[in-house]
Every structure is written in structure tokens, then in C-alpha cells.
Length: 111
Image (cartoon, rainbow, N blue to C red; front, side, top):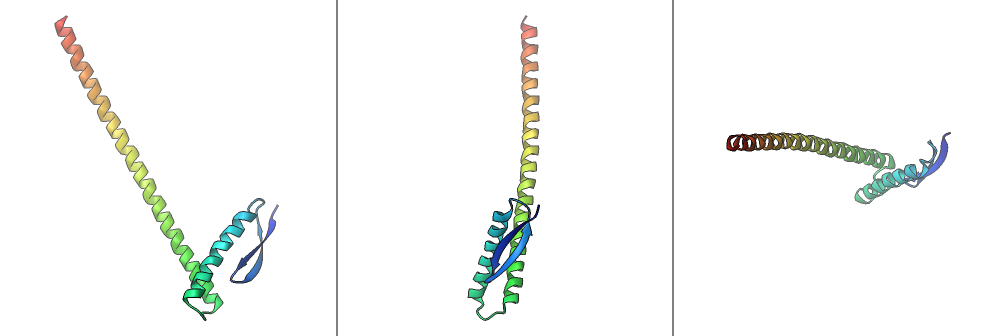
């Protein structure tokens, strides 16, 4: 059942619906947006509120895009490391097999 949550952004209060148990997270996100708007207000005094909200949205979109890029790069690095580990494991297995075969041949020849 949807829950009502009260948030404050740019000195305005908004009542929103959210999923049960999500109230704290919505308030946390709203506080982050409000922080961005207040930062911009300090940097650009006199800028209309709607412009500050648009700039804040753009900054948050940029952060989100960068985070997705970092996450994708990390996933690619993990996949590459997994591939490298599998290649190394196969090479080690082949080396051990070759050594065991060589030792077996030596022992067979000595017997």
C-alpha cells in the first residue's frame, strides 16, 4: 500500500506517495537534491528557483551517468580478470599435466 512522505526541496514541502518502507530512502534522496540546489543557490545568487532545480537535475543526471560508466568499467575489469584467471588456471593445469606425464615416462623407463 502506498505511503505518504513529506520531503523538502528548495524551501518547499512536497507530499509524495512511495512504497511501504521507502519513506526514509525518499527523504534521504530529497535531502541530497536539496543539498545540490542549496549549493547552486550559493554559487549563483539571484538565479530563479526553477533554473536552480533544472541545474540540480542536470548535475544529478551527470553523476548518475558517471556512476553507471564506472560500474560498467568495473564489470568489464571483473570479467577480464575472470577470463585471465581461467586462462592462467588452464595453463597451470596443462603445465602440471605435462610435468606429471614427463615424470611418469621417466619412472616407466627406470623401472
